[in-house]
Image 1 (cartoon, rainbow, N blue to C red):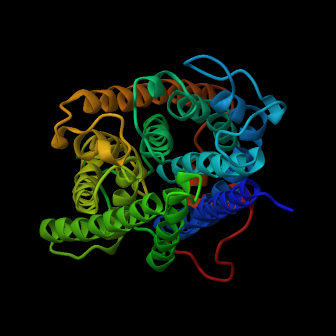
Image 2: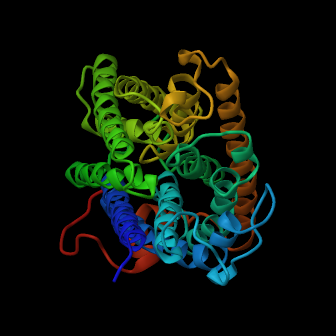
Length: 416
């Protein structure tokens, strides 16, 4: 007969696995968003990268990543549990369930970069990048924060990954896009940007709804147990409210600036709100989640404009959504976080002073700098060896034909 503890563990395991399945389904969301925001001639290429991202992340995180992230070691990295041999679970659920949940997070971080470097990156180069960020870079950051590393010892708080997942993926996208250079025709000779419109806004819209749905596994699932229903409910409502506020405020902001109600910006605003609330979702009240999401909606609009001013070509908005709002969400913990909700030190607005805010700032800047430097080196080495960018002719023709030999819409004439 099963003991009460066995039943509790079984329920917790089911909860973590369902959350892992939802986070895995977010890969489809990323794929639809990115495919919709690129031109038709590159849709198969971006979907192939999203598909292979999770394959590479699963293998890399199994072979090396989990050991680096959760193995016994020092403040910088873990050194035990290679190939999961002798590895231990980081929660009160079986190792394999915990691994699958964390592997899904790893895949999400890796796939963020595909959008920022879309429409001109060679497929073999992308596969190498995907394996290295999954097996090495992401796990190192994860160890610092979730694996008992040096930032964890300072009291750095990132409940579900604004820094670990989104800042890591967003900064990798930023440096990769800078190394790769803009798409042909993105900027005029006077430096002003050309609009290179995505080919399928309905597809991108479906992707955003899938991501929003998957985020209910991403954030509430990070409780890793069903014992505290109040915590799960608070995380869930905060996640939803931040997304709603981000979408509405981004829509309003772009409407004021352009006199057009831009759906693509509203969708990125909702994603920005989701990214921003991911770190503080367990530590803040619902009203604060609305504020955090609303600020994220403003940030994504002006962040997109900033990238165009400095000629960084990000076709889907990966940098303003994930990097910039990952930073904002991390800092929001130090502003709106409450000690009564589980934060080790209350945030600035609750009488805790600037201590927690300072730790949050130190942590997110350290992660951003580390990822920028390491991924910059990786991209430069890839560029110098096998090449990072496709040829001019292939970029004009589209990567679907050049890299994969198939068309996304066979039988239709694609006019570019």
